[in-house]
Each structure stands twice: as structure tokens, then as C-alpha cells.
Length: 294
Image (cartoon, rainbow, N blue to C red; front, side, top):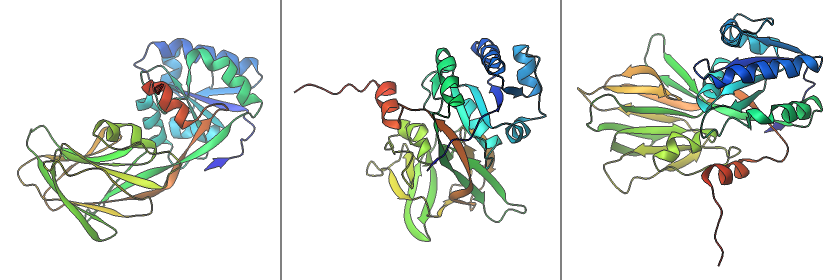
């Protein structure tokens, strides 16, 4: 879903504090914003990291509430963290890539001046991306996590397979023996799911991708289901560690008999889309798809 761009007068800055390249980029961005006559904010750790003498907010969610745009400096991991932190906020995010592959980060550092000129002119759109919500049933209180890319139910440190029973909309799908199961959003189809043999899905597609990791049966492949479906995964494995992760962050240890219910979250994340760019352009560029001549 694309929305009409708002007037941007207050911009928040967030960065991966482990990447040195972000220091100079943050200072450059702050200078460009201030020279345009707009207000720039950040949070205390980012201000200290880059030596910025600008107003701060107590945390990223507070920063998002006070800003009309968040510039996020880092890689896709930083974008995922910020997306989870501000889930449901109306503030759009624009990623500035200081990492490697970067499907969520829209621009490189050297493109900042031109990009900001386009934003001041309102020359952009906003895409709304769905989040996945995973709830461990029968918990008191229940364990609930959200993810932009994927939720993974996988084995822990041991190299033995785990066993998972999977149902979709109360209909039995399959019993997997595997290293784990990835439930990916459309946004996450180019992340862990793709590495595990999953399909590439357009971000605008209304689907989940279910991809087993190293399944015992070679016939097990990715399954595509509606984004309106409810997916239930029951842990059947005893005496082996099974863990639940969201966007690569460990959230909970699971026990035999635990049931994880996954569905589309009511909360979404909004991403800036610049003119002349598209998901398919990014695919061709990142994967170096050139086609062939016949």
C-alpha cells in the first residue's frame, strides 16, 4: 500500500553504533537538515556516538513520535531493530546503507544530498509493510513477539533435527523433521527464507512463505499461504532445545507441546520509496541479474 507523502519538517536520526561509517554520515545528515531550515533530533546514544549537539528523545519510540521521518543508518539488521521498536507508529523510515546487501536500506551515504532534496520536494511515496505476530499459546501471560522479516522456530545448539506439526487455518499441513521452520512476510522473502531455498515474493503480495530448514524429506518445499491465514506450529521434540526467534533475535525457549500461533499483526511499518526505484530494480542490482542473449 502506498500513501501520499506528508510535509517533512522534523527528522529523527538513528544509527548502528557498531559501524564507524555511521559517524560521518550522521554528521553529514544533521548538517544538511539544519541548513534546509528543518529540525533534526536523535536519541542520546546516537548523539554521543557521533558527537552531535542536537535535541534528543529518551528512546527510539519517543523519537519516532516527535519526528515525521526517521533516517536509519546501518544495514538491514538495524532497519529490522528500528522497525520492531516503532511498530505501529505513523512515522516512515528511510534506510541509509552502511552494511552489505541491504534490501531494506534504500540509499547509499553518497546519495544523501540528492535524496533529501527529493524528500523536501515531496518527491517520494510511503509503502506500508505488514508485520508477523507470533504468540505462544497457554502462557500466562502469553509470549508475544513481532517481526518484519520472519519468525523462525528452530533447533538450538545441538545438530539433531527437531519435529514440528504445522496447521494452516486449523487444517493439518505437514509434520516436519528439519532444522527449523521459517515463516516469512513478503518483506522477508529475500532474507533467511531465500537462503533456505524459499521463493522471492513481491513486497505487495498478501502472502506468508513457510520454508523448512534442511528438511529430512527432499520433497518438502516452501509453501505459500494467505497473509490472512493463521499458522499453528506445535513442538513435538523432547530433550532437544527448540527456540523461537524474530528477525534473528532469540525471543524464547520452547518446550515439547508448545503451540506457536502466527498471523498478520495489526501493526505495520512504513518505508520511504524514492522515485525511479522498485523492488525489481533492487533484485537485479543486488543479485547482479543481467539475463542472457540468445
